[in-house]
Length: 101
Image 1 (cartoon, helix red, strand yellow):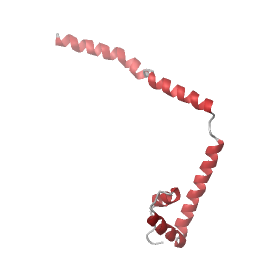
Image 2 (image 1 turned 60 degrees about the horizontal axis):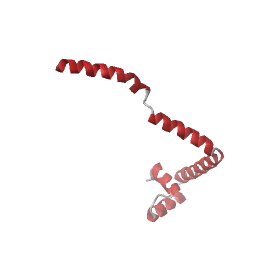
Image 3 (image 1 turned 135 degrees about the horizontal axis):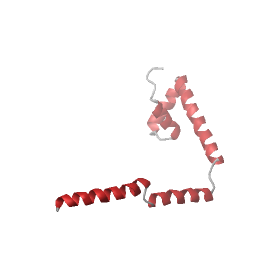
């Protein structure tokens, strides 16, 4: 079909992210373009399948708390790289200070 919209725009249509005017224009295009209509239908089916999977696979509140606790703990503790680099940085700093004196 001549002048098919970009796939991203069809995805935005499915997500309800377009202006009313643009949505109407794309819906008219879907009525006459089988390829774009199939793509939009596939996106709708994919989003529904993801929604169903998400509903089935939602982690328990206890698991979420456990994961978040571990993430926050790692963020607050010094990284291994920083732990290893500290003595080296101190030595380099001392060496540089010795040149200044």
